[in-house]
Length: 62
Image (cartoon, rainbow, N blue to C red; front, side, top):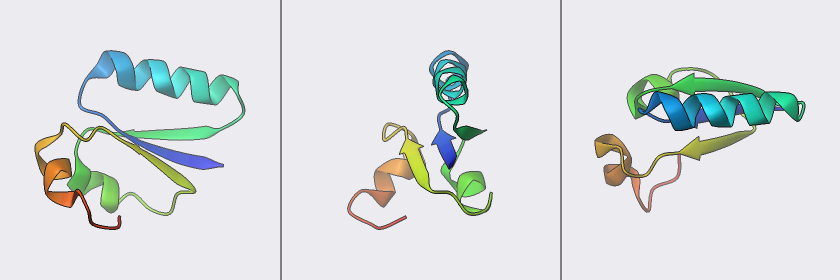
């Protein structure tokens, strides 16, 4: 299962990627929402809602 992580802080982003990979997932990391939306097709998204662009997406479907 391919999972997109949108996180601008390396420490939590890398930690989440490592935990997901150990559990058999295929995580991809993007630092901003715009790049993340262009990155392809994913089964799930873990979005840092404190990112400036993410706050505009609240209430919208990704």
